[in-house]
Length: 210
Image (tube, rainbow, N blue to C red; front, side):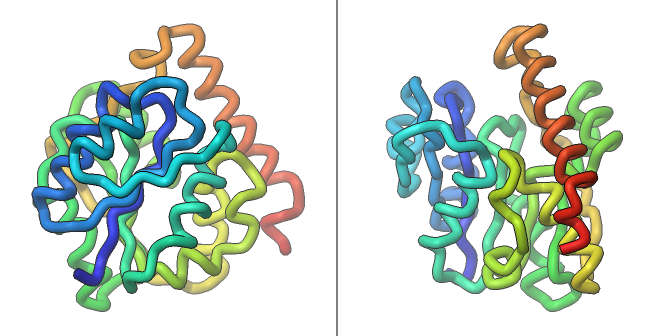
């Protein structure tokens, strides 16, 4: 197999098993990086057939991603969020095919007909999508990948500066559990605002000019 599925996860025991099972059903090895979860995320992922790397404390998605990347030897990597719903094997193949065939260097998944809120959120900020396929070495070479808790701003900046061939790919029927649904409205909204603040910090910190 030339591709590994990498899933950073924090307190996702309710959702991780289905995501792992879909990826395993599509024939991919799966590495879940448990980012210091306080629930049974690691056990649920292992039960579904994933290899699990457990971090001793919560460090943020960027750090979890970097720890996982260090373990991956396959030429391609599929990044997935741990809270996807209605994910099917063909969604993974849809993401991977243009990269594997050489048409793109990165494919970024956006939801279509997967639910009103997830469709809206994904369409409003598609550059924040956690569903991606790319060459492993390219992702390992992204500057400032772990400077903020979320890796997408650094990845997006490197896409624009490295003349990488990329495109959005529709994941029709797939969706995601919103932070407000998982954590409660106010706590989830707070987490979302922290994510946006992290993005703004990155954008105006000068790192994008490094």
